[in-house]
Length: 120
Image 1 (cartoon, rainbow, N blue to C red):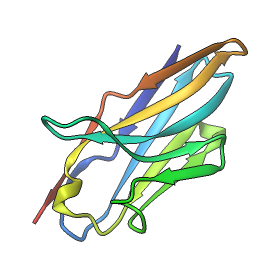
Image 2 (cartoon, one colour; image 1 turned 45 degrees about the horizontal axis):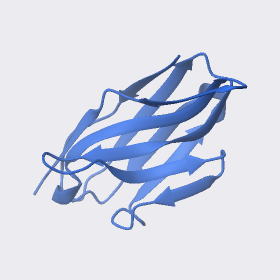
Image 3 (spheres, rainbow, N blue to C red; image 1 turned 90 degrees about the vertical axis):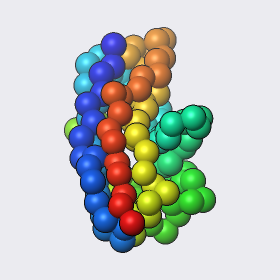
Image 4 (cartoon, rainbow, N blue to C red; image 1 turned 30 degrees about the vertical axis):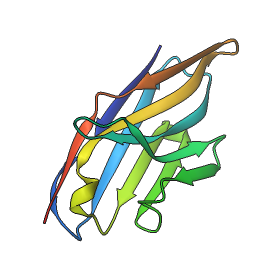
């Protein structure tokens, strides 16, 4: 199985920056997608940013130009650099990975979530 460990959340003032990290470990044959989602109370979890096939990136419109997703393939780690944070970015951020643990076994895993709070 694939395990995820997230870090980097916290409290920051509007306009500030935070960097989230998510390290994947365990039985990993290859990673297809890895990225970040976020959720606020009463709302569905939404895509923030994702890397697919190692090179293709996709961002939510609300974070384009402010957030940057990157990946260290050697460490199976994905980062989310969040700049110019706004109060509406406040949420629990979840890492997700879609990976093959063997050539025929694909799984999707979620991290435990990390709280990001942006004060006005």
